[in-house]
Image 1 (cartoon, helix red, strand yellow):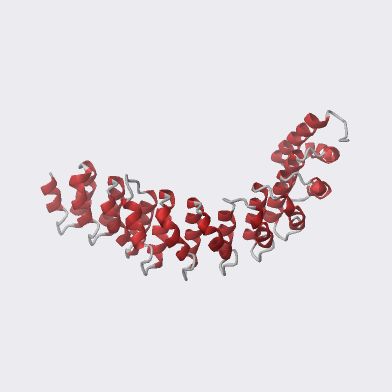
Image 2: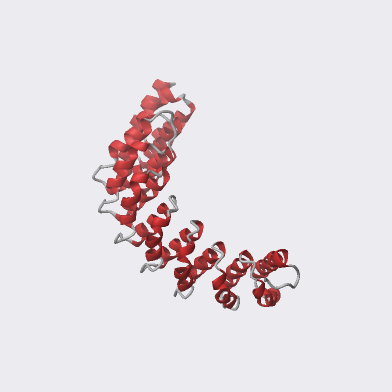
Length: 319
């Protein structure tokens, strides 16, 4: 059967080769691999795409260079399939990481980006230094993926290089750098997060509010209260969530005011935050939301009132 498939993979008829490569899936990986490595160079895009997919399923690390080569394929589908194959490739041993690390400095940006993504789940400590070097890549998409992959590795050596990316020229890189630094939750990073809370890009500001809340950095409460006046509701929302997590009782009057905002997402988020704060002074405003047109707002208000009642009783004010 193997010889017959090999002949059909060399057939001048495209349809014959397409059918032949589909049948390779039925062979054991050791028999199929040499044929797939031939098919991945076929002149037909569908044959190449199928071959790449089957190479990933075979799980043989020796197929990695052939898949990497398809990252610069002229066909969009083949390139996307190759990129997904590197991301999802699973094999025993460190052979996969070795091949990816060898390709991390290739001249093609798409190759660099894709192999960095492929390294993500492998968590190979050998990747730390090449990834730190990739933080200086001239292409923002490569820097962004390097930041994310370093977050997976959690190597303390990457903290300072990641801090420098908080001032990257590209907003998407700055945003993921804020998220990556969340892995350390260090008070020493608080000034960086507060600075990011005032970034020119709202996505960076929103990410910083999220990180501050998760890291329980209560010293950032004044900056979060300032963020309640942000021009973007998405930033306001994350600041509200963070203030609730940080038990920022000083912000209760401001959060009560959000219960009357036109945007239901802000009303809902403020209600939950007031519940987190067990804000008894918010009872009347929360009760008024029983007739809110948005069911999720009504649910949030009900849960907040239940939390307050559990803390203080049906009508008692906090002492």
